[in-house]
Length: 260
Image 1: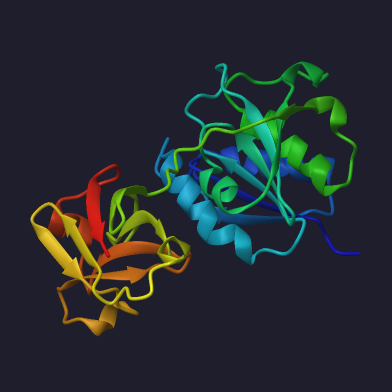
Image 2: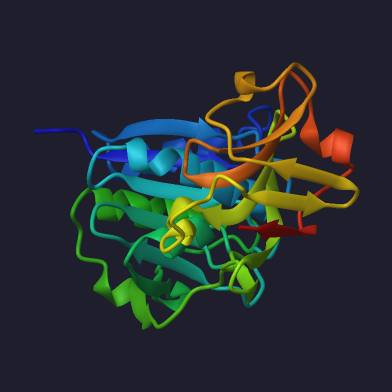
């Protein structure tokens, strides 16, 4: 029998024992679980970075993996705790946008976690241990948890589709700045469907203008800005051997124009 896989991603760091507490709770509930760390170095409270990290990771995991994503500045408030089920995986965490990419690219069913159904005391400041870790271990072990869940029609998402200004122009937004300073945009390959010739693509951001979509960074000279697709299919602005965000002085939320 395969070991149930539970994958963890948090902004907890590793020095304070919070991740260890979650792992201990999971293994107490489900001793044969295989607990995998995606990352615990998400910037504190940075929901968007956590969502992007999760998006880069989850498609590579085996079916029925349970993901616990905890970047949760609203812990203990009225924000919901949720379970999101897709055709292949389960996702457990706060309803604050952490699953924005998942629900954007997948069909899903969502449920709110009902705290009043827990018989044991739940910490107001550590739902990662007392709620999400337990729910994840129960799902991984095949336990019936219907009494803990209430169907939810929609979940919180920060991810917006690109705005079409006219037939040949989109208004895009920077949705993430990665470790290398690449600016990831809310534009994917399937947004180009219906356009026969995209060789003349032009992107304008501040005083910069970029042309063409290149295959990879090394297609332009060192230090030059370029457009290319990231590994998850999003359009990004990069700088070969440099930091595009610093060069352009751009950050999450900045808008730009893409002309096809």
